[in-house]
Image (spheres, one colour):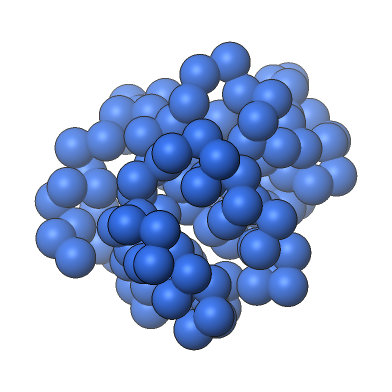
Length: 124
């Protein structure tokens, strides 16, 4: 998958424990925001971050993101993969440790462009 296609997507959702500033989900969320992307924090806990509302589901977002960055245990990832499919999102990035081959194969089978085993913080 050509990573430059992901860089051109301006509206992202980051899924993970974003409320915890020590976690990569927060670091990626902040990094993308600082680069000028529109980024929606999707945190299963629903805890706000930096005074901003977080969402517990991609289905709650005020707009459909062009790309989703998964920074969550693959066991929980299946729920979000189903939401990605439901919303017809075509770009999905699994941070290292957030992917499983089952999730990657399911995404590819649904014609979703997938990156895995690469970190947004390094590739961008």
